[in-house]
Each structure stands twice: as structure tokens, then as C-alpha cells.
Picture 1 (cartoon, rainbow, N blue to C red):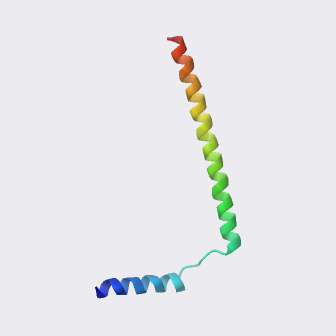
Picture 2: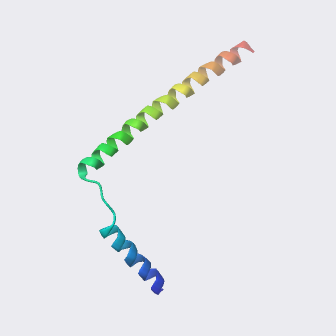
Picture 3: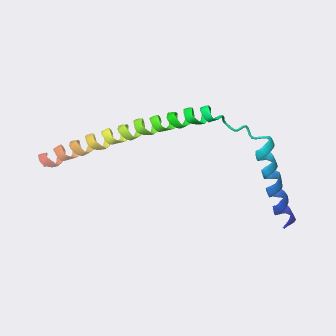
Length: 63
């Protein structure tokens, strides 16, 4: 039990003293970057899904 208590104390100490937390502006910029990347990737997947669906419909009509 003593090891677990020591682990949590040391973890808390590291979070307080050694971790560099981003500023509010950096956090907002990172969030915008993630949102834009998510929208772009979603759009690419939608286009790939739509085009493959149309291609398969065309192939099914031929046979």
C-alpha cells in the first residue's frame, strides 16, 4: 500500500513541477487545427465512400 501512495504522490509532484501546460492561446490554436483536420479527413472519406458506391452501382447494372 505504501508503494501505491508513493506512486500517486510522485505522479502529482511531476504534474505540478515538470509538466509544461499550454497557454490558452496555444490550446485554442491546437483545437482549431484538430477540428480542421477532422473536417478534411471526414470529407475525404465521404468522397471515397460516395465514389466507390457509385462505381459498384455501375458494375452491378452491367451484370
